Image 1: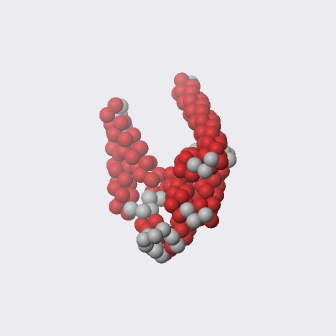
Image 2: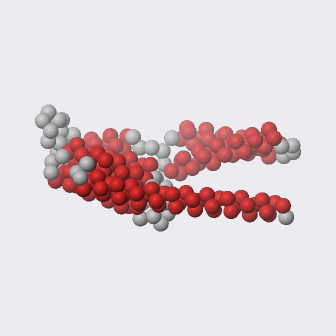
Image 3: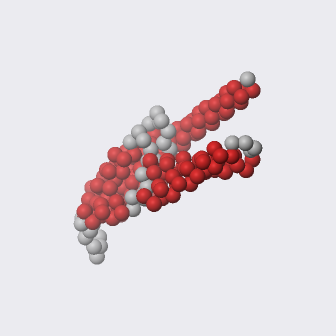
Length: 201
């Protein structure tokens, strides 16, 4: 009975924390899109990019603001390209890519925005018009972007689970009596899994 109450209380705490976090991220996303639009209206492109990127990174399920943040970044980049402002275009597309990498998760849709951003960065880099700026082939730019590929989400999740297993097993050995063999096995499996994932990446 006591265990059921503790589990119910823990579930309630998790639900409440999730609701508060979701509401906060939705509020942040809305405020950042509004600030990005205000900055764009006064042609303050640097400020607009900063706020649009913050909106894109305020990712929670069901929120419309991250997609609007990415759309603002894409629009700023396109407009900058049209007027020959390659520096602003690169900054906007770079912010798109950074936000996409920061929000990588199954179902987030960030991979689509990342692909758009990388294609745009390669396009702008290939026809930079500043005096003395080297011409960068689009394929070289894409290769350079892919060389900085972060670990996949699945790999990070496996590392996290392995770490939890190690800490859980070691914690059980340290603070609890009984079940030493199980705790040792869990800690050992976590350590081996962690090492294997690191070696494979």
